[in-house]
Image (cartoon, rainbow over all chains, first blue to last red; front, side, top):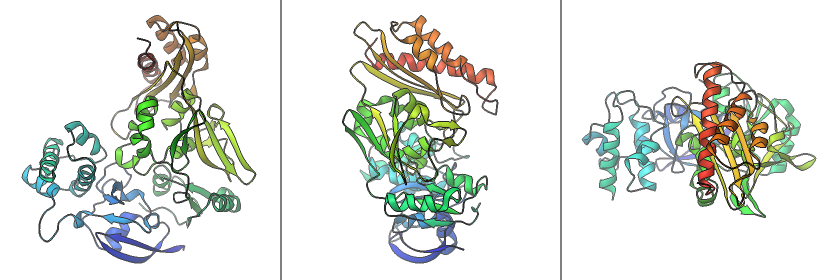
Length: 156
Length: 290
């Protein structure tokens, strides 16, 4: 069994671990680091429930090997809140009812965060395009768009 | 889902990567963005003993115009193509194509060269590269060679690349004045492969006649399909509606799609016809023809 030493910084904390070559990043995050906010949905890189930020870019962590992330900065949903204060996107999803069952929410939050870091005034179309790789089967997306707009306003 | 066991290599140079590929032969696969390969391994539709990750080899991530060509490095991600000012302003066919591939999160990892080298007829860049008359650069043990893209595809998941070769660069001739291109794709939803898709890149003469026409189809057979007869038909003719619809009919007649959940053979062939016509009209418009 081939293993590798990796070092990744997750939500500001540096972790060193020995991982098998085939270990997926989402399993590393959930099972080795016990950060279970990142969800596994379809497990086939379609649904985006497992979205994390890898060096500030949203990626589907079910389709990245942990060893590929060696040396990288990762952010997960657990890293959004600071000192008991919700991140503006979290606040937006709460205020605008941007979730129902909540399964897609961690991925939606990470994708929205990355969008707003790059573009403080996204149009509705830009928001819809940005989240087009994150599936929500409850909301119909209307309130998710409103939540991102709320966060954008807040972050400007 | 967890892939079968394999060993992972992360070479620091192309030579080291080529050495690993040469040593492990058909036991090795190149890992770049991994957006096609990792799902295959997870679904256990493929297994591999050695993965050679070329993602950190320096000097393979670029988009630049040089010597009358647009050059795209072998590890350049789709997101870079999408955000490139050169591409946005001068290669609209590439912008059309890239924004129709998978979804933005996948495009943050996926590479352009991976899409070209994968050999799946459902990949979108190959048709556009054929329409553009692109060439790919392959590097292996015996050095570097260039392969015209319309001679690159051999069959489903089969290309002209030898097991020890890496696609290091894509070269696209910079289109002359009065050129335009477009890519149209019909898919059921974001992330889906094409029911049909058409790429067109053309150059118009002073009198509005077709001076050059590249037309190719995605998912219309075992390999990306160059519509050679339709291309020849257009040369010298004026960009008029009757000519466009005839060329679209000729291109679609060459399509041999297979029936699946995306539709029947007849449906897909007809969608291809409609998309070729749309892409031709848009390309003519972008070339300043109308």
